[in-house]
Length: 370
Image 1 (cartoon, rainbow, N blue to C red):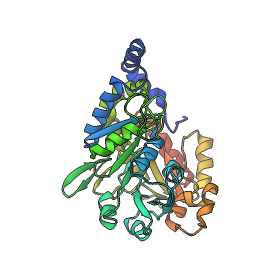
Image 2: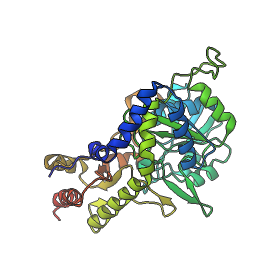
Image 3: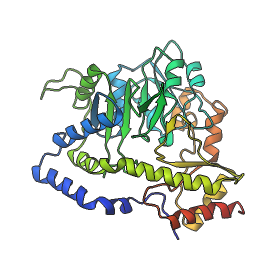
């Protein structure tokens, strides 16, 4: 039995009528840019993330870019972040003219280490950008304590709805950062039918500026207070996301059940290390990522068996050709480099059947002779 890494058609089949109805409402209204669906989604995401404000934008990459611009980060500035993440995290830092400064990860949860982040701070550092990788919040409280005087941009592209207990309170993705950012790329737990993004903050001044920056730097037609961007969230995407949003908690719970199934099935398998979730965290498992021995051979085996899988991420950002100008070499961030050579992600989407889960487990265990 072939098992895809992600089956969006299976999800769509369960929500088709709601989504089509929402889309046709936008089509009938002929109001495609911003407008009521975007306003409603912004309010809903602000409530979900425990923030005062949410600002929709064109995609998750733009969310990071707008956040950096709203904090006036640019040429000559540095931003501390992780090299073990999707390219957009560091790419946006570069694209505002600043310099990405990498710090190594915690090997247990793959997220930015507070200690290495603090050690990377220089007089030119203007912000820290942790990533909530694979659906688990980074140790934002520890990072804030280690770097207390810098704004934090939380890249929560993979973590909408995730939470962390801090000081006896459940803190949600985006809630405690200066600015938090989300992506609605179709593969995300809350994914659109195309691109989309969202920025959240508790700061009204920042929220106003973010709204201005996303529409060419002006809130009044043909009046531009600064040079901004064209980064508006389509009403069609907002309508899809509003139709999906009530199901998000259930979908994330199903992912956790699937993760627990895998955890039990792989227990005692010495060649496989299952994901570690910080006891303070509630993960949404945007990915289920193992550390394994003979990773590349396992990939070939899974491909031959028709088992979907992916490697997030095979080459850390400090070793990407485009960042050669930073002068970093192999060995600079050993934990990130080690992770890049060992990780592999398995299907975790909510609609997986028990027989599909068994097929995935059987393929992995069979490869290691169990």
